[in-house]
Image 1 (cartoon, helix red, strand yellow):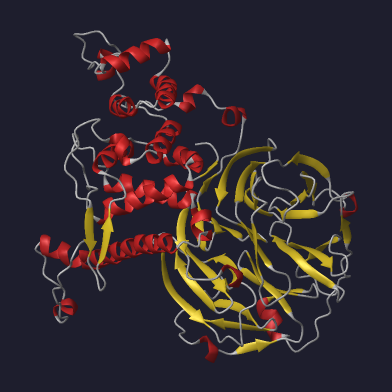
Image 2 (cartoon, rainbow, N blue to C red; image 1 turned 180 degrees about the horizontal axis):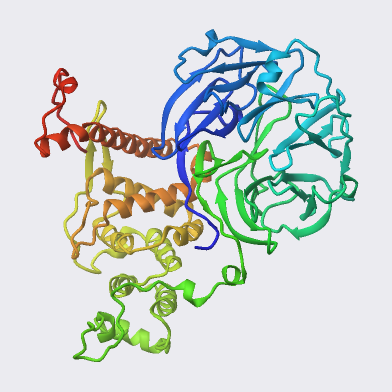
Length: 622
């Protein structure tokens, strides 16, 4: 499999982005999410919070929590000058002893099996050693007006790399290389990290001792920390970045020795910007439209990219064994990735890697042999088509094209001529409809009125209203007439690949997308979408309706968030409520699963279960 970024999946959203301090790796597919007032232990595999620890608002956390490898305890910086450690069984960490320091603390870093304390004056010391000498003065090497902007420990050389800026000279960056666990040594010398007429917007020290820097003109530089003198910074030009806007702050993450990820602002998205002013320092800027780019260092090329709902300044992204955790809008999302050391075959691709052959491949189409003749081998592009549609296909004179290419030309002609009935027939007759054509047809259908579909074909009966039960019953009305709904169902039933459909949906007008979201909400709420529809039925399945709804909410997220229309907010809230109720119901079924399994297998309940009392509850599925 070639290197790639996979589908984004939701993690959690019960926090404010400006309070997010960091995400660190725990054990067994768990991560630690640290906000100013709470540390959460989160199970990535199950997408659920295991437990959390909170602190008083007047004693906030000031850096991301980490796991101490030797004890499996958690450690975090509080108020910038004290460290707290506690076990996972601890409930109230305000009662746990805190170690106060004379020197302010920048953050805690984990390297191999050790935790290091990074002080704002540049001093780096092992956690336990720092705690035992906390009353002593820490003689750092940074000046008072220098602020740490980046720090990374390179395990292979046991060194730390620190980048700083002066308050009065924000465009000037100095780089320090510090040997760890070396007492009594000289203070490291700072070297200027600069390129003429440019500003440093991103840097990353790789585990291979290579320093990657990104500059405001788009140039990326590579510097070998092992073999080159720091006087030669920033090194040699590596590539020119064209996917993200290089003048904006970009976070560079190491995925492997040969691949990095850039999290920055996507081009064309710099116009819409929101400034979220926090209580400290400069505002936290949120721009509608971020981008994550996967780059191959060996070939100095972009492998793939994935859009993000929002760009945060600075970008909020961390690497975990399960993927890249990134702030996606007002939530945390996980983007799994696959990286593979590149060669010419993986970079340029081969035909052998582009096709998959199943066990049902037909070696011969001669009748009388053991291999079954594929159904498509017995048909032509004119089979099972109306006379009018067949005539249009012949006029195209595209007989030699594959079905997907032929359909593209055919759909364009039918849209120009506004042949609504023939578009519906095309969706039924052809198996392979490109995602771009599906969006083009959706734009056309949704912009037409209900009257445009009346009398074009026979439509099955369909409920147009339903009532969602609850404390306050809600009546939901179908936004389309029966005929229009029938045509839209034919569109929703077609198979698609979400990776290909998602970028095409950006072309769908917002009003059209909103009406389609309303219709999908209706068929899910009214039970019109079937779990496994019959072959002859034109009603989409629950999975198909849910996938369309998810992709629409994802691609139209910015407009939905920024709108002031109360009706739209109520629609989104209703969608959320139904999904949340379904999730609670499914979690309840999972809790009952062990008991049901024992009953099915006729096993005797263990003694500790016999002493428990069970109650039967009636579940109402809506």
